Image 1 (cartoon, rainbow, N blue to C red):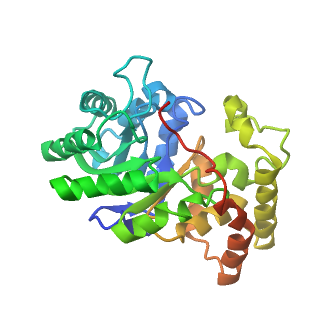
Image 2: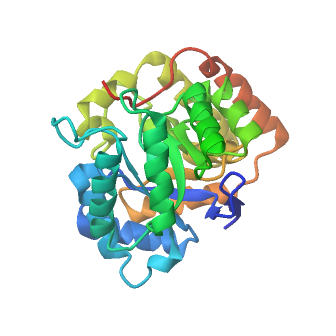
Image 3: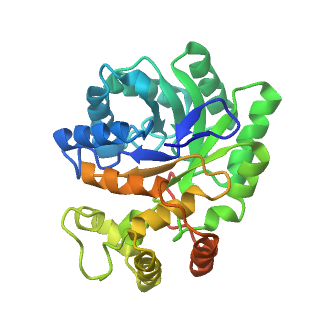
Length: 324
């Protein structure tokens, strides 16, 4: 397994990471632990979760699975999206983040997280307040590094500017929707990250499964798939995305590999990408995804993928999560 620096930091992460949004939801506890076992056995050291995944069950399961081997992983969690309907149950105020960090550490059964990410930009809290709180978390030893997710380029750059001005710890990572089906980060976010030494952590690298070939027929949802368990996901199953999925499938077939392997291999080679987090609901999916680190696409194949996905540089992102 190849390891990359996360941005310009000294933190090294496996080029393929494990996303855990399905733990406690589409994958029960026992299966989720087996997925983690398969990931660690395959050389993956980066595990991504959040305080809201499966109503906190994802963090709890991860904490149980990592007992006795916490030092084997780079563990990241997030806070900021709504935990409830109360006025202090969302956002990136000091009060909210302090409580959420402490509760996440308890569920994860650890005294620190390696990377703590703000889950989305909070327009109602001054960035100075958020950044001072994060700086205190790092000084306390409960957080090693900080990052942000779902930030626009200008929001991220503003945070970096305040950190530089006031001497606060800087963000080292940006987690964003990025895939062949969503190249919108290439317009502004990725140039900013390259300039500022920030690592990209793509989420939805397979566009929720569309780039894996599982939705070759848009009116059918495979058993246990995201579209079956989350009806809102079906809004993505339009002809534009499905046609891209078919084109990727044809290129994959011509090269005798799975569409998911081809899609991940392309993404791993994009500028500023440090690690690609991929979810799994079965150990077999982890093992299949690991093929992407062994596959070496030709320059011509990468060019073909660039060409068929070029239209997805324009328009709206595939996914973005914001506070109301």
